[in-house]
Length: 193
Ligand code: AMP
Image (cartoon, rainbow, N blue to C red):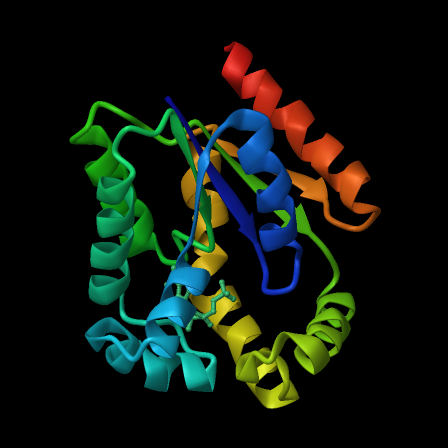
């Protein structure tokens, strides 16, 4: 069982890399952002509850997010591994993930982060907003708010996973293939251990 946490700021390329890594390592890809957007689009109860937070670029409350993540894992319980993209984003989520995986006799195999300069990422997101249709990518204030959320609530996870010897980061700037290659080197190392 391989459980990879793909870590990085908004716009760092997590979704793009996840598409390649999930095939390469035969993992079920769970993007909490994608699941929330799907629920929003279909106007489900979860979508209604998450909407106000997502519209502002705030994190959705832990309780809702953790429950949703667990449901997604349970739906794919036969998987040989998971690629968590955009989760965990708070210490409470990381602790809940550890407890949840432990209850299945699993654990986080590795956390790999995509590093890039904030200003480069903000320009990338504004560019993406022109075609993605994502309202949270189209407004610089909302983007900056997502960075504030990241710095305040998500950045402490670096320490959390470093203490467990599970945190690795790679330069997220380069061609898609170059970045996939950098991530793969790290993941391969953990798998061999
Ligand atoms: P993303 O596509 O990962 O950038 O996520 C888009 C939005 O979904 C975020 O700005 C949050 O509002 C919400 N979201 C996604 N993942 C999480 C999470 N792990 N915890 C809280 N909110 C999340």
